[in-house]
Image (cartoon, rainbow over all chains, first blue to last red):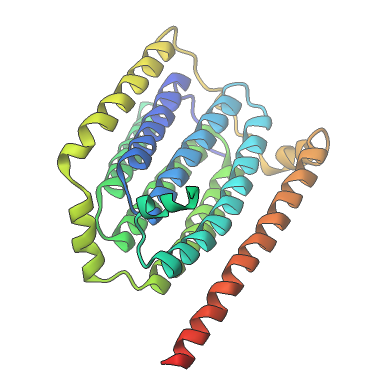
Length: 104
Length: 175
């Protein structure tokens, strides 16, 4: 199985870059679907950091934490997209600001 | 050796540029396709880091299952040309300045913290067998918790989706 020695800081910086892009997406976008996509980007970056840390010491724990992040992402997307359908049906828009009336 | 590490940097560049395109697109389905490209690039990086099982999961579950879920919802909502125009109106270039600067500051802080003596990854692959033994040994309780989480989200998504489909059928019957 091919695995190569990579500077672990570079992998972690890559994870930080992806996380920062996702964070900027969450802050800027107003469409709920793009918000969910940005959340996925951020979770994926977390998983990358876990796998890189696991590869540093050749332990399986990093991959296991990645699998838990993966199941969390799947659960979040299933409920989140269900909520998107409801918001679109009730408010006739995907603008996240329109949902602020949930506060009452 | 040097040849293989170049592959890592190419995959990293692909994933960063594809992710940037995801965040800046106005068309949701184009953004989804770029997101799939980004996830595939990350899968290549997992493989190079010596995590073939995580790499396979990235493709099968992330790029396969989760993105298809997104695609179904985008198709159900029927986001056509009008939504692209609306999205363009929402995306004012000046809106990027504040959040962009803040996230840049956070990223630079993190990069500064990571700058130090370079450690290398081990270069040995952790195979699925070892992952499975560890997963159903010390992490057994966490596996059960993850299964409960998935069950809860299944029930929640079914509840939300069922009411949506019923309302939609009634609307169509009215018309």
